[in-house]
Image 1 (spheres, rainbow, N blue to C red):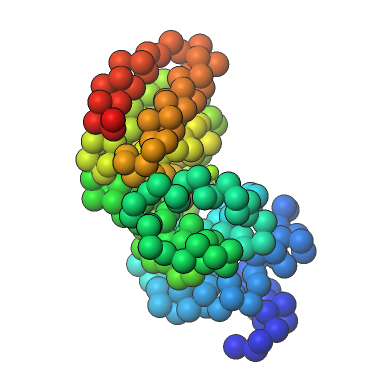
Image 2: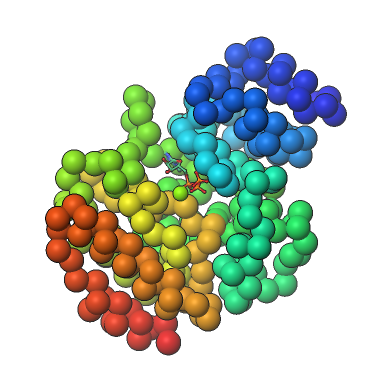
Length: 253
Ligand SMILES: Nc1ncnc2c1ncn2[C@@H]1O[C@H](COP(=O)(O)OP(=O)(O)OP(=O)(O)O)[C@@H](O)[C@H]1O
Ligand SMILES: [Mg+2]
């Protein structure tokens, strides 16, 4: 690969391997696909026989998610932006999580750690039977996981579905499994980070998730449950997360 990532990217775009839609204009291209990211992406594409990237699913402050077609089926490729991520914010979720005690905390190391942390969290959650997208591979700041959705469209976020009440109890069951079996707190749970796939609620976006031994674990769990509760309250559905909070709180303290 040529050293100049912008020309390498241009080459890819010219070959039609990336089709950028609205919101993924020049600015995002240059932010996301720095040289290291592009190299990591190429390596992972080769490893997983990803022949092409279908389309961008989401472009946010911290990451861009693409749908891609791998040898084994459709995947979501999440690329953490190196340049825009708020580094100071990340420390709150890393310091205090004993699983990541001895890793490189330099500015360049932290983004790789952040991506790896999401991969580990997804893996541990899945092993515990929590509904999360299956993590497939990680290389630097590029994470590949199973794609949730249909051929036509990605799975909608909880806030976008017509029947959110259908999923309430299953969401709480998953929060319980996450704490009791995986020993984790999501720490950014909301109607944005739950996708409805095949009528089931999947928890996504777990880079910030922490071990229940983290000093702020209980505080994060309370915030997660309150987010869920206020989302449902806004949809006119009365919930009671207090009982679950005090019950799960006992396994945290
Ligand atoms: N496995 C997946 N399958 C299908 N869509 C996905 C998958 N993972 C993420 N997405 C889509 O991409 C969006 C962003 O993903 P995620 O929440 O993990 O990233 P983020 O760090 O919150 O990014 P942002 O900076 O946009 O908030 C999700 O809301 C969802 O719509
Ligand atoms: Mg998110």
